[in-house]
Image (cartoon, helix red, strand yellow):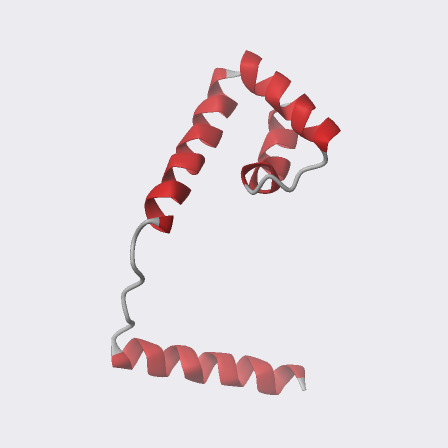
Length: 78
């Protein structure tokens, strides 16, 4: 496992959905690579912080624009 592999796999790693062999390789890389360890640890802490917060409602104008854009995208796919 190299740094690029860590970046490609770290989302599944943080979600504990990575194949056990790949997870082992990734952990071994993290033990040796300070840069990757900082990236993974920072993302893990960020996820924890945001999981504990309550979602705020979107302002009505933002919600309306979002609804409009999503409706247009769905219309193009049909």
